[in-house]
Image (tube, rainbow over all chains, first blue to last red; front, side):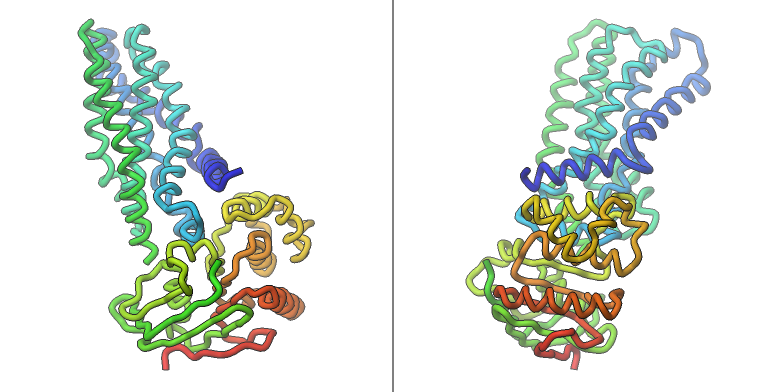
Length: 221
Length: 199
């Protein structure tokens, strides 16, 4: 097996494992989705109007949940030092970590997203696009979130700092994805928002690892 | 692969304080150097600078005609922090680091046997004692052979028997053309050159 495949296996096992696995993310997501009708009011029309958007915001928050441990656990126990001493460039190591984060939390959240949206009263016809948006958006959340996680390395209460750094970076995917869903719901053409979401995810995957690797090097030096 | 380390007029500082300057150190195949010096003299920082983690203020660290970025693949670093995840089993962790460093699959079992870790492999790392945990970190050096070992206090948690046995392992590494640079307080259990840092 190549070192990259071995790294992906370990990172996925770590992300899947104790304290921040898929069940935690999905449970948190379900919790936020349940709180919303309690705050907004349970009239079906009112709820249905905000359902796709609410499902989206909850998704972004759930994606934040396990980000703070992404680099920190390897920084604290010295594994990050050793990960730099390999033929695999640190940029690729960072990309693999984010990919594993997406596999362990983004994927399960994408499967839970249509359930939450329908439960809030969104039209079941939106389900396909909800899953597609959640998959792409999750990729953007994982790679943009990784930048925040790497930048807050070594800071006390790094998790909160990560959230403050990362939430502005989550604005575009939330706008694009939420926009596409709202337009499909209204029977309007929706592909533009979806394409922009895809473009943002692609940019995050391409540029995120460079920023993460630079932040990690800075934290280690 | 790298066959020499040559450090010329190196100056390092941490947190705005200069640790040492004009350090000269040469290491060639089959040679071990013990770095000594008081606490905070910069032994660990020197090892991290050689591993490319810290940029020096002045001076150069060269690995013959090998590019420093490539030389990193030829370095094993063993620090106070061993990079082992306490929640995973010793086998998972040793297997990961062996595979990631490009070691062969069978090498894991041989290295574990050499360090008497075979019965412990299925335990979580958190269940290991400090000495066992250090042996697990040392097994990594054997499972994925690399010429340059940078060791930071490698012996500290080991008992007398294991200090001697690790001395033999280091001797074999040198005999096969390896290089060792170790920051120590106690003398290494094999003949070495000693370089004092921070004088």
